[in-house]
Length: 457
Ligand code: GAP
Image 1: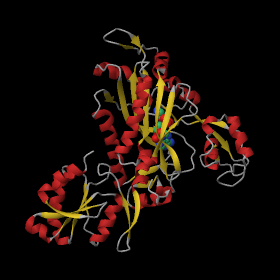
Image 2: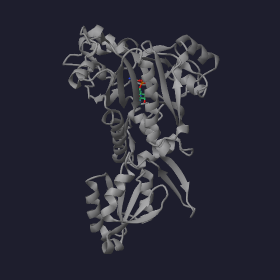
Image 3: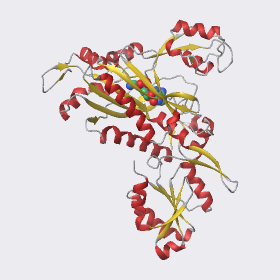
Image 4: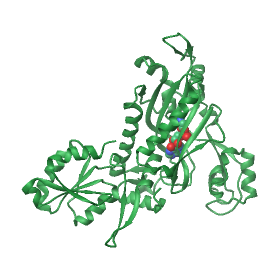
């Protein structure tokens, strides 16, 4: 995290520069929902593209799917979500607000106490003994903890009886599991192989805000790697490294990332760890890596009644593979990337600038075309058109050149291309580097190769 960044500064910058807006804002908003604006959608799309490039395109044994959000309700019985996908919630008896007991403890202890390792009774005792208060009214007077299921329910068909109840998926993973054999058979993949998916997930979270860190609708990028039991420990370590390398390659500093093993394992997991990022709210989960064993596929075999065993083509051995899951939220990654990129600089002339140091491959626009004067617009637009075939490039002719540079710095455009009167004479332009602010003169015909090289990932 850049040392000068706070969540408030990020929220304000995102709103004023078209990165992220509060959801349903003109109706007074809707808690924990956010809308991506013109700059934000480009950045998030780039993050998703880079993830897909790394985990599908550049992989020889991983395949993508795009499964339905609405799934047969039995899927969630099999996965265990209907019975136990719940958060420990308690209500403040004084002001009637609802809170997660684990979050209250985490915030009160500033991360020193780990509620994941506590039972409900232990959490209740801790809250009383340490006078943990309601963040809204300041009283320590809560109901006992109750488990609230996080799945959003809806109904299929015209009547709303219990039989038609279905759910918005709370994770994309089950879409990968139920398609295990479809993918394996159609690609003739041999174990070990992976299935990847990017898509929306929904959870009825009660949260203290924290911008896009935890929202009720979010996107996940998930990769299930199916391997033979006995090789799972090795693959788990491999995906811990691969997941970390992806973040480093996006430009996140190693000092802002760390592994954190789970203290309490889910019933299906043999091992689980998070990679945490040093967010403005403190060290928190950015992504997870789980050894889910053969739990999910076995449960789907049991609940669907279909045989989903893999048959080894060499030995004819039949078995249900183990799964190493790597899961990262696209929105949570976006928050890490925004936090990491933010810098307030005081320049030599005493002026200040906010600059977002996105990796060029992540930046919304790779370049901005800036005609020095409006009457150079025709030439500038000609250059714009020639570059737009290859890159997302923006155009700005309003205000002084200094102001235009600042606007581009604030949305992290890595290169500003200034068109001046010399351009009309010798077909060269000035290219300004966002980070160093150095300027070089290059021929217009070299711009495509220049930007291709600089924005590669
Ligand atoms: N399939 C495994 C799974 O869903 P998870 O730890 O619940 O595991 C994986 O979620 C990732 O999804 C998290 O590491 C985080 O990046 C993201 N995520 C989870 N809940 C989220 C929420 N409410 N808002 C934003 N991102 C979330």
